[in-house]
Length: 149
Image (cartoon, rainbow, N blue to C red; front, top):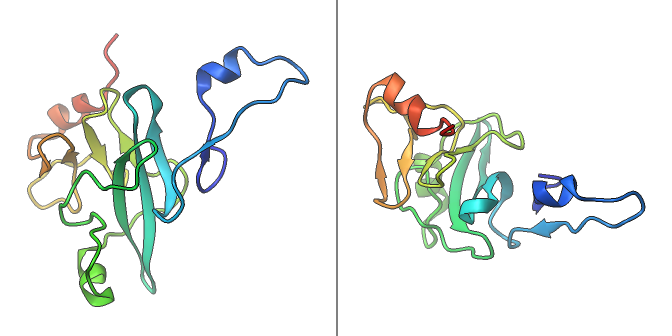
């Protein structure tokens, strides 16, 4: 990630030459700022401010090149709602680039960066394919985000 919307594919950096330009790709405008991206699996997470006092966010999880949120869970941005409804669904996060986490297989996301699959975790960990929150113990939850060797 190189800016609010921009990212560079790591493999492009590995083969870059001095003086040669590096192409910066961007997520679509209007979905918030880029928080994590899994280029290999074609998915990104963007966070959008809902409130500044306290700082609260909603997440968009989408395919690269799309604005369409793939999840409709609590903590996900869904259009057509009033500000008060959006604030009720929002969550706190550091808001730093890279604060969200996408699993290596591109199936799971922790929008606030906390790998917490507990029943009371909010927003918790989301299964993107099933559009459901994940509920399991800590070791199993952490394993979802561990790259296979």
